[in-house]
Amino acid sequence: MSHLVSPSLLAADFSNLASEVEMVNDSVADWLHLDIMDGLFVPNISFGFPVIEAVRDITVKPLDVHLMIVEPDRYLERFRDAGASTLTVHYEACHNLHRTVTEIRRLGMKAGVTLNPHSPVILLKDILPYIDMVLLMTVNPGYGGQTFIPGSINKIGELRSMIDEEGYDVLIEVDGGIDLQNAPVLVHAGVDVLVAGNTVFSASNPAEVIRMLKEPV
Ligand code: DX5
Ligand code: ZN
Image: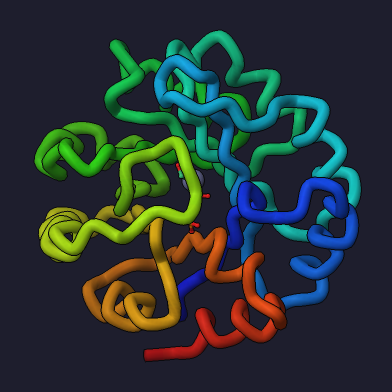
């Protein structure tokens, strides 16, 4: 399988959201990444249900929803109803992770689990059989436009081996500071899904940058 690209709407021009979503619709992007922040799990607050629902109504791409919120269990069904295809929760925010991911799947969504940069991939060993995707944060979550943390590369290789040795059907996504320079390195290390915010939306030709991120390595 060739790798997927999931532009992060956080870096879009929110005063022209419809045209930003149209651009993604017309591009070779595979998914659309939506970052939900509650001001508690991370210092920042982004956007919530009204925005997700508005985007759902105009996008043709599956919604890849990244929850940076405490107690995500309170809202799983609402994110499903708002249009999430994949719902990703933070390992660090869940006390009963197996229950949470089981419920996400029961609701008909793909279940993702994400790790902060400080969390080792071995923490996921026992949850891998129950999920569809791991999101490795390559910056500290909360803001777009931060610098990629280089040590993340080793985690990708380690996680790739854990998944492949057991033959699990689990995608590896990376998020934070992804650009045209590090993208091929990440794919080579075993990444399946690249998230990119500023690299896409700050470009003069965002659709062309999405195409370049999609290029096989
Ligand atoms: C950060 C978010 C990212 C963010 C990435 O907490 O999870 O999805 O939008 O932005 P860039 O690609 O600009 O680092
Ligand atoms: Zn994200």
